[in-house]
Image 1 (cartoon, each protein chain N blue to C red):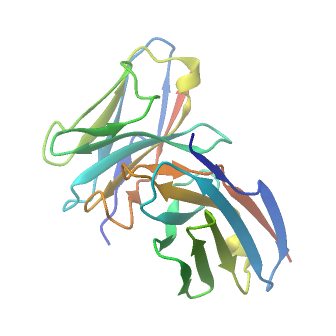
Image 2 (cartoon, helix red, strand yellow):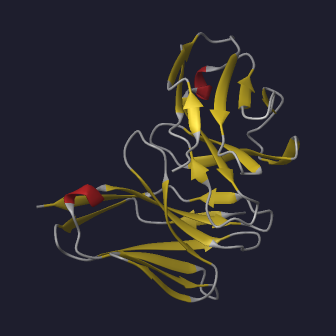
Length: 109
Length: 114
């Protein structure tokens, strides 16, 4: 079966750094995505990895290891507006997005 | 910046009724998708659509559901004989092609079945 695991909830402090992990087992792999979703809103695209390594985009970075079926999203200089759910999704061999349940990130002042 | 739009933002319907959810994808995009997210649960793929036909569909997308592109801009999801468990947010998305790095999501339609 297809499975994507990520922690249910994490808490971090404003200004700090947080790493959200994602492990996956899917039928085929055509890329891994991270999306941000605020409550009651649509997911918005953050990052895409298809090759091993780190992709950096401003305060956000995403890492992929295909051999380990593992990715993480790194958020630096946390701001209160970063409080949201972070969704890991994998594009399988049919280019369908398979979604994790999301990690709710709570930022405290 | 072009965006995906969806109407209505909220639809309330009685069990057993039919609903049509509407989406206008980004104009030069070729692939269209419907996703569902039950409150507090993960996003679930329903169907992808290309060249006026279904490209892929999930197990959730049974005979109760259908999609259509009735004209050059709209993309609709029809749910026949709605059930209580159909209550969810329904998101439409579009992408340039199936290998596109990014799918652009609409704001969603919240469907409440009573």
